[in-house]
Amino acid sequence: MRTKHLIIFGTRPEAIKMAPLVKEFKKHPDQFDIKVCITAQHREMLDQVLNFFDIIPDFDLNLMKPNQNLYSLTADIITEMKPVLDNFQPDFIYVHGDTTTTMAASIAGFYSGAKICHVEAGLRTQNKRSPFPEEMNRQIAGRIADYHFAPTIQSKDNLLKENVKEDDILVTGNTVIDALLNSSERVEDIDNKEIEMLKTILDSSKKIILVTGHRRENHGQGFINICEALKEIALKNSDVQIIYPVHLNPNVQKPVHEILSAITNIKLIEPLAYPAFVWLMSNSYMIITDSGGVQEEAPSLGKPVLVMRDTTERPEAVEAGTVILVGTDKQKIVEESISLLTDTARYAKMSALHNPYGDGKACGRIVKFIESL
Ligand code: UD1
Ligand code: UDP
Image (cartoon, rainbow, N blue to C red; front, side, top):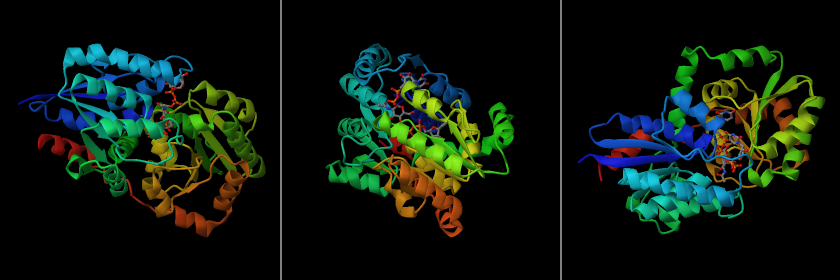
């Protein structure tokens, strides 16, 4: 029997990690009626991903508002999902990770009676305020989900400790590796204007430090500390160039542009589409970030990462030695960066290639599991 499946996402990272799943399901049109619903919790940054992966959503809730708050976004998603669910009546819905879209869409999906499938399930810090609100979002989605696609054994173990039935969990690897491998191949072939732009601004005589940051718990003083640290690294190291595609969140844009725009060896640029960002990661010396997805991609590319967070739900790369947690303490960020710039033995050790997050076949495993139900 042909079953109905609704894949729901709203932000850039969810889109990157769900795009390969959409493609994988669409290989089996006889078995699966697949539709994509975007909440558009993000707009421009989501559209960049949809364009690259050639995904045309069937339902676009178009919900992003400038500087949106968690209360109204949550309410809007639940309310606006109702007509979509009433209209399509999916048998299964798929949510990803830990955003407001994930949490609210899983609640709406539960109300509709569909089976809820959680992709990138079981990540935990066990600190409900860090990352905020993501830790609680994924715990709520995990509580509601019928099937849990865990990227690693550790994430499966987290779910078992919460009494999720073992038969309802599948360890798949992270779908971000499916996206990364697919994109790395295509980056070589495509005529990419953003990569050409990057080649004109990158100074090949310098070591490139790539920076991204956006976490809500770092807004305010955290971002000021981060920017002061980047300023000090740039001013003290003329052989370094910092390149920073700045997240469109106004709480990020303001301090970053105020503190860093006048420094000659710091380049502030717009968010990049995925293939150009992958190219930039590959061509960087090291990465400083608070991003979840970048922590997963960097080990596969052999790039050391300083993570500007106090906790991580992704311990595998820390254990593998590619990732170090530095929080938002200015001195710690500066010291660890300088150490990686000067201590070649340490740098070499951290740059060893690791693949703790999968082999690029996660989506195939998910589709097989659904076929077997
Ligand atoms: C959200 C997710 C976070 C994820 C991050 C990825 C929640 C609670 N947080 O962050 O888990 O890591 O996205 O980037 O769901 N904006 C634009 N254009 C865009 C995107 C954002 O202008 O394409 C601006 C808007 O003013 C928007 C603001 O950024 O209101 C914040 O967007 P939002 O999705 O609420 O960001 P976060 O919650 O910080
Ligand atoms: N990314 C991108 N363009 C950029 C910066 C990041 O395509 O300019 C990609 C990155 O490769 C990763 C994802 O966006 O796959 C991470 O998104 P973000 O850091 O916004 O969210 P998080 O992963 O922290 O939820």
